[in-house]
Length: 474
Ligand code: GLN
Image (cartoon, rainbow, N blue to C red; front, top):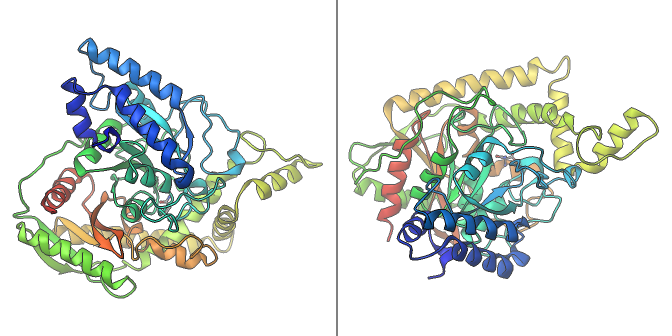
């Protein structure tokens, strides 16, 4: 087996046993990147020399019997919207092509403090808006399973990098599904933590009330390690929670686990074989001891509509800072306003412009009540519906995405069909809940993800259930 194919857990025990070195690990990832990245475009930039230097330092520590953390010496990748001091970080946008990060985001700082080896930054839809990475200003990422298909998005680069073993694990951000959907389409594990579990300081904001950083991993156990490395309250992000940190609580089987299948989600609108594949996984969980029942989850459909109002409103506010004055691209006009307009017209891609326009419109006087306020009210109803459902069950399950990986270009001309990709994932963002996508089979030789949602700060139980299923797979 090639070293880049190891899970983090496997690599950790081999490193600790002195069977391999961090340098060898990093080198095997970098070799694979050289082989595959030209066709995949998963990484936008690779820090080969710095990664090797960081790996050497980790090896030196290890030879002295020191270890900074579980991720010490482990090669990982970061999405291109996570600030990493002195590096170009662009959020997949032309407007930030020359932008250099002035500081480390909290998650990145924690990873560095724990000795993680950062291999590079991964491709994404511009400002994390999209479900295919086709809206990146730097060309799409390809699905490692089939180069004619998308890897999902917006964190498609991170998903493809993990699935193709171009790193041991990667981080992404999830505002409406951007970790879980690409994980499903590429065939890896993707976890969106509870809102407030992980600091957003130094994450380029898309929709601040929904954004959350989380891991892409080759196993549920690895995802747990990665979450532990970055979680925690942070004075730099007042939306982080003082809640007890997540610690894994693994279990042997699923006895006394109650699984709910939301009636409103399991209807029409999904590929029949996706439905069959996830149902099969649920049957298996039943055999492992779980009790499965149908539950009501009112407003499941409305979640998508509420998301596509709330999100662009926040996007329009967050992206206002890219005005050609403070960051990145500046296209000079005769007067100030013209400079703003030119910079933004040329710097943002079509999808970013579409959402800024929609959000600005929805927040404008006379429309605010009808759109934003109404969507926030619906959000409250959705939150209550989840709370009610979790009085009866421990986990809610749906497919992660309604379809397997689609072809490049298939959905770029019709934004609505692209938005419909998020139908199962946005609910967890709108309600702030933790959710994970776990690979559960293949349809037409393309990966399928099972989507499991838990109650707020219930990651320990959620991941334990996911892992029992994962380990039971043939
Ligand atoms: N696909 C969704 C969107 O386009 C989700 C994006 C995300 O989670 N960053 O908004």
